[in-house]
Amino acid sequence: MDAYSGYNQIMIHEDDKAKTSFIIERGTYCYKVITVGLKNARATYQRLVNKIFKEQICTTMEVYVDGMLVKAPRRANHIKNLAKAFSVLRKYHMKLNPRKCTFGVSFG
Image (spheres, rainbow, N blue to C red):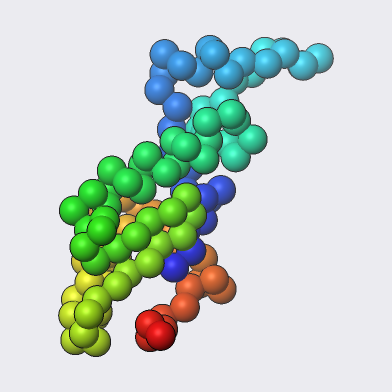
């Protein structure tokens, strides 16, 4: 499954917003969310998915920066594992890219 890493935005802590400030002719601005172009954006996003899926990682899931793999030794367990993953995604208001999601892939 492919998460929208650009869409699932992580809010920047209020104290850190000033560290992202920049000046243009219309004034001084700062970022409110971590954008893809910021230095640690990918690492921060990886820490986020690691944290929210900590119970499933290495047992029923593998998570990468913007990709997730839900796994199960038996087909019957796979549906239950997918439901748990979707539940966590819903809880944290994360979105998936349906064009890049693939379901029912067997190993080997």
